[in-house]
Amino acid sequence: MATTELETGLPSVRQMQTLIRESKEVELKLITNDLLTGKMSWQDQYCVCLVDHYDQPTVVWRQAIVYMKPKM
Image (cartoon, rainbow, N blue to C red):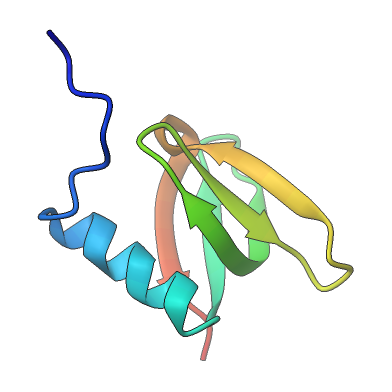
């Protein structure tokens, strides 16, 4: 039986939760070579939601993310 819950013990999940809680702007690089910037509003075991400067939410599949880093 596969788990359907977010594994909160994983460092990547904890880091994303911190970025959500602190409303930090992040940069997401996708496998399509697209670069998205915005603030993460939520995550689940499959996707993350990034809200851009126009308050437009974009849901991104975790599998599509090459890297994520906080904007300085």
